[in-house]
Length: 311
Ligand code: MG
Image (cartoon, rainbow, N blue to C red; front, side):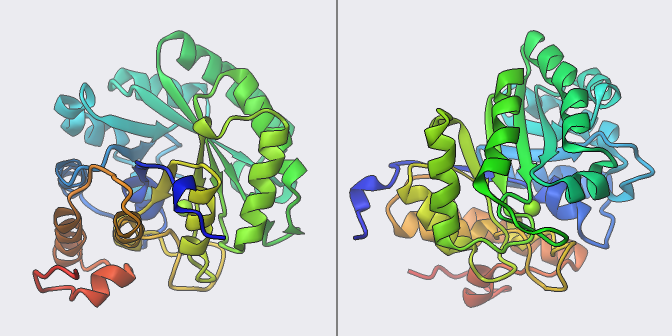
């Protein structure tokens, strides 16, 4: 039975568009447009944003301006939660030089994706992350872990909950503050979400430290989100205007759109601190400014160009 009382009273919307989203778009945005996007997201009430990546600039040209962007964002760093992806010790040093206070590390639930994305084994990548996480925590930084391919993998098919739990336990043992569970190719359905959250719970990993990161590739992102909410998850990742496409499936839809997520949360009476109209305007501004497609179904339904409120 649908139990409204099981829903959290408030949810932290974790915006990934400026990093995860833009990394997977073909267009490279100027640094100042990225900075304005982030400022507008903050002005909309978004409480946490992944803003940049300190991977090698030649590997991800769309995010090669991480230092310049962080310098633009310096006045905002003290009072806003902004994270940056770091792949290794060098990335941590670069991030700290420009004042980053929260980092993110990316692990994989499968050996195939670890090889394809990190050019390493699962164990090898965790050994690289361990000193990065420990040093960052020692210096007072917050650390967000991600696990990719938590529910399925294009090479290996289904992924068992135990594969994910084994990686999760190590990341928490190294000291991460929060773990985001990524359905990188969007194949999960609600029963899979329950199975994984139950498996994590059985191994003593508190839901208070978990986030979910769903992709809408198969149209399941909001069903999976509602399931996670009913299971006690209260941090949800999403991407403004659904930025990001999907790098591993030939589909127009990738990241869950922030507008669609907030439409559902506010419809359920869950508070987010977000001004919905300002959020919609931010997605529209981005489309008008850059020509990037706005994939949010809610934004489309409410009219991409018009200023109107749905209900
Ligand atoms: Mg994503």
